[in-house]
Image (tube, rainbow over all chains, first blue to last red):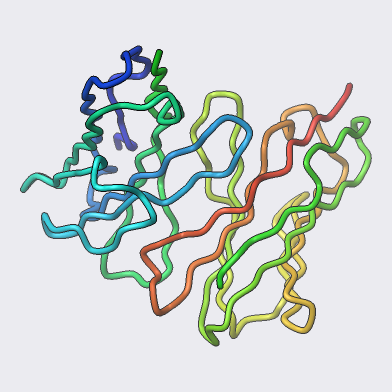
Amino acid sequence: DAGVTQSPTHLIKTRGQQVTLRCSPKSGHDTVSWYQQALGQGPQFIFQYYEEEERQRGNFPDRFSGHQFPNYSSELNVNALLLGDSALYLCASSLGKIVGGELFFGEGSRLTVL
Amino acid sequence: AQKVTQAQTEISVVEKEDVTLDCVYETRDTTYYLFWYKQPPSGELVFLIRRNSFDEQNEISGRYSWNFQKSTSSFNFTITASQVVDSAVYFCALSMKTSYDKVIFGPGTSLSVIP
């Protein structure tokens, strides 16, 4: 049973560039959430996708956008990268019908912005 | 406002000692969920436990135990007879029924178990 997979694992970009991160949820899961984890801090909620729509969004600017595909996989896009966007980006999957259910996380994509 | 506080930034214990990780939460919702996650160096957060606001019964799972007290808005985590493999960052987290999709994480406590 494959868990949550994310790609790429590491990447380096320069300020102003754009990046796309990808996530495949755990088998059977239909909901994908994205979190940003800066060094030494807890994960911060970016947004969640369910049935190919953004269901909820955290306090992140519009430079952060996403998409969910019919197979439930998801992408996170960040435009006009800033140095402060350097972080570990975590994808978590869950079952959308379960209220307050546990999240299953991938190992993350570490983004460095120079 | 909703918030999770983990006052202990770093804890270091010698193997076989007991250790308690503190978690204090804030929410005005009457229905909410509390979680603990473990993050080893690999980066992947691993779910440990989930509690809803109506279930204050404490839970024990092997060497792990959790103490939920609504009166003090605390959800503390105790590891008994710690082992080196317990070394990780531990996060307490909160989600509310009104926005249960959004899980709010605390800043984490880094636990080092020294052999």
